[in-house]
Amino acid sequence: MAIEQILATHKKESLADKAYRLIEELIVNLDLAPGMALTEGDLCERTGIGRTPVREAIKRLATEGLIVIRPRKGLFVSEIETSEYVLVLETRKPLEQLLVASAVDRATPEEREALHQCAEEILAQARKGDVKGYLRADKLFDEVLCAVSRNPFTARAVAPLQTMSRRAWSAFRGAEKLEDSAIRHHKLAEALANNDAANAEIATVEMMDHLTNFAVEQANKAKES
Image (cartoon, rainbow, N blue to C red):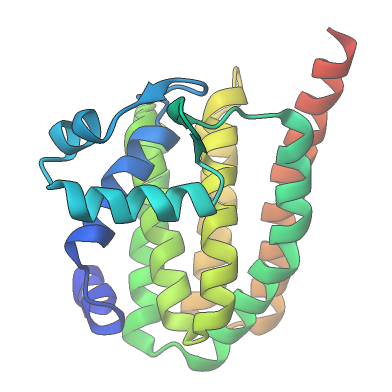
């Protein structure tokens, strides 16, 4: 089963969903930098989508903390704090563990193979040194994992945290090697492809601990500066 088919089966994308996805990617990639002022018109132009869907996307992004709406001042991309990054990962870890456990129980063999394909793409983009390609592949892995877990409540709770983590990593990564994180995704995907619950749990903890250690290191550097 193709990755696109899996996602389409679990959720049909509306224009507002598409606007959200495109704006979110611009924010995660830092094409829309932290603190940057925004307008509805500019976002419509960047996405090629009309005002009503873009307005809906803005509301969702504001709820998730990526856009700040300031009365009488306008729209702004939210700032990123290293201390908040640590807290995001602290909250995300148990949700990822639940998500992975659900995927082990409920994903079909075709869906498990799709997760493996996603992780292969993450690794390929990392080895090319393509940061935007890596982030796009990482997002796709998360979306497929959320879909095949068949737990919409966990998926809705974890998705904004995954996005916030991705953006913070993008902002603070510095000399962090893309491949270090990609290898951990690959290990998780292999465990899921093999329907190996024990190793999937181990791989999830290792992946989240790797991200958390990086976030704590960045937070400590910020305190010292």
